[in-house]
Image (cartoon, rainbow, N blue to C red; front, side, top):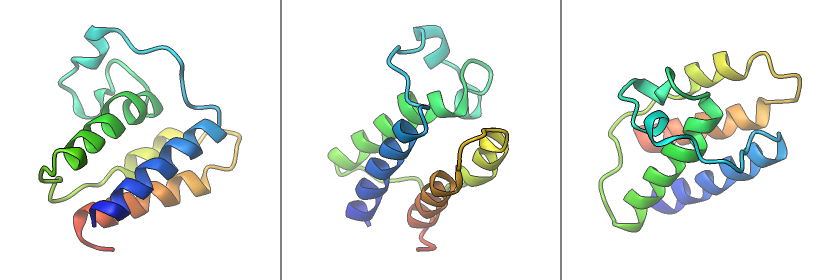
Length: 106
C-alpha cells in the first residue's frame, strides 16, 4: 500500500502543478498552526494539500509510520475545486484514489 500511496502523492503534486494550483510561497507559521480540519480557516485546500497533507504523508511513509485508518478528502475537494474553470476531474480522481488506498478500499 505504501508504494501506491507514494505514487498517488506524486501524482497529486503533478496535477496541482498542471492546474497552476501549486504555490511557491509557504503560508505563515500561524496559518500552518491551524487546528481546524484542512486548516480551512487559514488557507485554501490546495495550500493544505501542498504544505500540510503531502509533506505529512511523505514523512509518515519515510518513517514507516502508520497511515490514518480512514480518510475522506474527496467531498471537501469536490466543493473546493468545483468552481475552478480548468478540468479538475483528474485531480479529484487522484484524491479519491488516495482516500480509497488509505482507507483500505482500493
